[in-house]
Image (cartoon, rainbow, N blue to C red; front, side, top):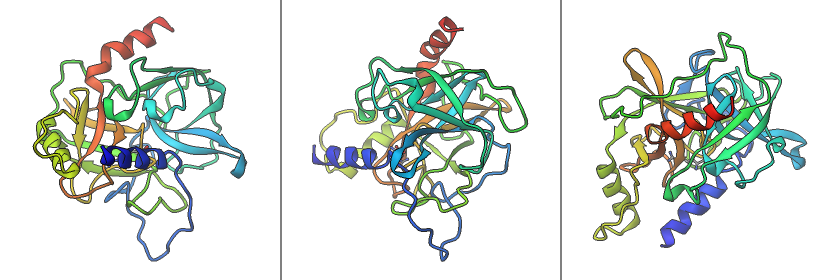
Length: 279
Ligand code: ARG
């Protein structure tokens, strides 16, 4: 149980992407093990902001994905509470630079999955409705949702993107350019075994990796703190599909400890229902 507490602390600690002084000795690589993303390659990637009085600025707390001109999909754990005030959030879209000077978009509605309690139990997703629909441009465009029946395997070509930490103790340095990394999907059963080993509970057969979760990543290639809510996309018959939402993990990019994502296919019916009734 202690390790769960440890995970929780990590998760909580990750909510604010800190901005300590950059270390010029270190090359700009990351999410963890990634590279700077070309402008316009991941046009659905957005940054979720809250106002931090201490810095007098709208500060990045999580990633998110545009899935419709007026809707952003993110992680439930990025939202402070189920009845969160939409006016407490802003969305930044259309720029690989986190503080690229683009206008922030207002949020008019927040829908946290009603069964969400904590990321470790699943249901880690939330929808944000934008006050105004965005126009498609070269740099802003929604990603497609997978079909609910899509089976994601380790053979899929998958990438995760974000402005999160580039190492367990290293946040992304200025100018905060979006990072991308190719990650391999790990089957739930295998991932569950890895997490049991990591927690020292090898003999108990509880399910740590729920069916609505999906694992991806390997030693040196993973998402990390501050990437939460952001997209894991896989190539499906020639186009990118939003397959996962960055949710949680034990540390980042450790050997045999993949990152854990919300499995989007599970929630496609729920998502389309929410969006459909609000149009
Ligand atoms: N919970 C983290 C966040 O809030 C995401 C952690 C992902 N960890 C991982 N090893 N993939 O940003």
